[in-house]
Image (tube, rainbow, N blue to C red; front, side, top):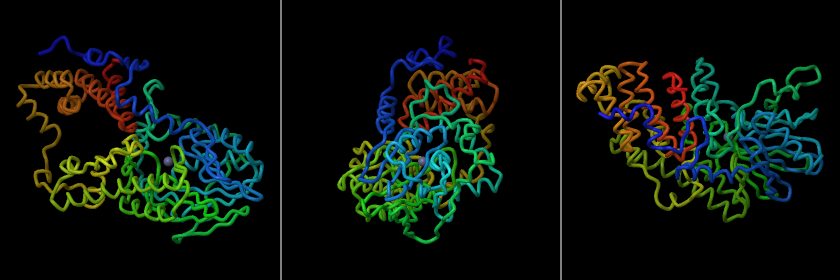
Length: 461
Ligand SMILES: [Zn+2]
């Protein structure tokens, strides 16, 4: 028994953390994650003669191509609150009218800021004809839980002091819906910024304001993805099919299966363009032909490796839990700092690939009809010598640096009593340790958000 280690166990372990205060000293994982801020510090990057990219103004990059008598945008940022400043910065560079907008995919962080740029213009707004396909099945089913999980993943409920970044983007908030007031049309209605031109084939040539572009269907992070190829200046706009992190092949907020093999094949097509620069959906552009090739190739290789190794293990009969150990990136790719797990994680990708191909059943018949969580918890508590001993073991595990096991032991206690305040506080402490040791921003945010909820439920904050 350790009566001295109760709700204050965490402050004994990590005195640097006051939960609602600033973190006095970063853990190594926090330092590494914070160092990624250099990839999305606010600036306008002059990528090539006619291409300018606004990085760090909004969670996603916004690019402007300046043509003979007009401009074209690739993506628009998340909200007018963020994108008004981009529009102002772009007007300093060119006052030409907006001729076109291209959405690389349907995610709101790339499409929500369009109104800032339109200002009475009537641009062609281009996207794939399956634009918005990721959300449609969830909306049609009436699912809403992914929004709540999305809030946890993004850390929106956390105090600013606990948010570092989102791995590939600054830690912004979505803003208030009424911030769109400046975007109202002359009759007071909101501007329609949805696509007014779509294409269904593999490749669509587009000429606007004297600029010729190719829009190329490229399923990856979403099925509705495209990339933009600007042949005259050999610039590739990747959308979220490339950015500087191990890719989010599965988002923990919950998404339909992201076709990992198709994503790697889209990168094959992007590599074949032999670009002199690639503009990612997030993080700084990569400039120079060799740098671009190397960046895209490593990103492609990481995706393909994780896919192929997972399939290899599946064919050997491995379960997802076993595959997570089996699939480890090779040293060559681990050495690439831009493939760190700041945004996506290999282990989560492995589970998603298994589930995407075979569904939930892991192949072990013990798992066809497992005990309920409560039944299992009763038996574990009995093995441990009772609930008090189980709680003590959870506290001891946490004190011994086994935060994951401590959290799992607390889950047994919470399966037996969902209101057990002491178990909630130990679990909150365990999740906080896991968060601070996570270089993955989304995991960190999720751990800390649930830790905060548990502390509130237990009456500690
Ligand atoms: Zn994005």
